[in-house]
Length: 161
Image (cartoon, rainbow, N blue to C red):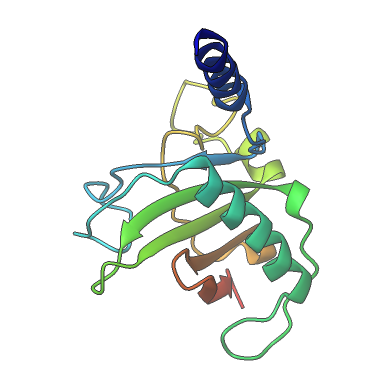
């Protein structure tokens, strides 16, 4: 019996040490609903687990591969690794788990346009902690919403198109 307990404990430890990979270019932003720039206002939030984050990341790669907007238009060529992704989870009116995906091209994040009226030089956009709502900018910025429960996406759009 002692060996059996030790074996179960060992298996538990090994399983708990396994962590699924999440890209360095993905961040999950919780509680963005007080943020004035977030477009969906007063919605309930939820915290996705690693499996849901990994699913969304893989699903985005499929969306990019197909690259078709809600209007049936094939957009410009998009490479997953050229972007940073802000995942903003919320519950829709039917309590389904939705992840709003905000995509920012790495060039914009790493080389931001400087505010000439400010003395501070911004070296990089703080994309891991602040939601950015950008107007226009072409395929440097795009958004999609992923219904984690239904395994579907909607509202895929590329800025300026």
